[in-house]
Amino acid sequence: MTDRPIKVLIAKPGLDGHDRGAKVLARGLRDEGFEVVYTGLRQTPEMVATAALQEDVDVVGLSILSGAHMTLLPKICRLLREQGLDDVLVTAGGIIPDDDIPALKEAGVAEVFGPGTTIAEVADYLRGHARARDRV
Amino acid sequence: MSRSSAGARTDPAAAAAELADAAVAGDRRALARLLTAVENRTPLAEAALRRLYPRAGRAHLVGITGPPGSGKSTLVAALIARVREAGRSVAVIAVDPSSPITGGALLGDRVRMQAYAGDGDVFIRSMASRGHAGGLASTSGAAAAVLDAAGFDLILLETVGTGQSEVEVAAAADTTVVLEAPEMGDEVQAIKAGLLEVADLVVVNKGDRPGAQRTASQLRAMLVAMPRVGASGSDDRPRPKSPDILITTASTGEGVPELLAALDAHRAVGRESRSGSARLARAGVAGAVAQVWAILADRLRESLHDDDRRALSRETLAAVADHRLDPYAAADRLLESLTRAHG
Image (spheres, rainbow over the protein chains, first blue to last red):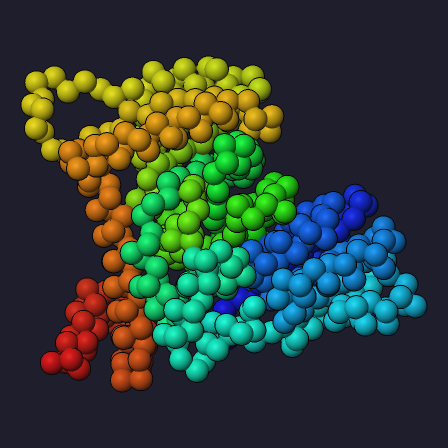
């Protein structure tokens, strides 16, 4: 069963309207053999958490460029934990200053991918760190 | 709540019962995990489905199909809004295609349905088709049965964008809605066999576009059932359906209340005449037959890949690929290998 595709939610929390990066990543991960649920722009933390729960994803990938990451990302991590999704890998990408990364990791974000990261790097990381998929 | 029910590896039957019962009791996390097991066709899923199957059969299963871009997801979102206003619960299974090359998939139907995050009576699940070609995933019907058993009143089964012949949804659903967009084809398109024939309702979506009325009247003229002169009342031959044609603008909600009313009416008719009408009974049997055949095909495939037969299967298929063996002889040889082992 371990050869079944890893399921990833790609979401853009917050209010900035730049989703090209998220779409390119979604498409790139599709080409890497992932099943990607794309939820699009302007997602509230509640929308992200509900989608992650209903879709039973292995990974939540959050793209954020607005600068609101210190508010939104910890809240999403908290909502996921509250719903019992503490085994879901949470990653973030976009414009996130290095200084903020330790606090985000403390809040539950496993990895932060900055500008210039290749799709292959993200795919390899997700393959190496997503939860075991033979749990049910 | 999730960790306590995660003892899958210790005892599949007990874990299946626990997960199934939690899903029926309203635990959405358990429901989501069960759907994953169903998609992956694990032993736990089979045990859970056996437990849940007797509880299913109460929901109204509605298939939504039509060409890519005709507005299926937007219409599903509009239907969710109306159904919730009426106080009914609704689940959605939205299927998108898997890549035949990498096995990956981009599941994008949810984009239009994200407004219901706080509503526990709305459950949306995306599914990749995983190589299945009929417009659904091979496990979509089983997933619908799980959602049915979990108590949802209405289940919307949205297919991949379809062409002319992906009619599988009609066997899986109680009511099949085929979407058309304006100006997609002439009257000859409307009288071709295939997708339009399995429609219980045809919806011309994007009703605010020019040509919507004309497309609807063309469909009306062409899809009306032909009277069968001299046919006796007891004639049991399969007959084409005579679908109603509706116009919606899913993005504004225009026409959606009428669509919901038509769905309810179709369901009521189906229930009333289920015992009496041979045609409707046949539709139900077709769904059951399709499910059983799919399981049989899976079992057959598994048997042919078990330790005893894997080498023979591989060698036989390679021989067909090289034109050393014809496919009929190959099938006979593999069937024979099964009966030998069991006899």
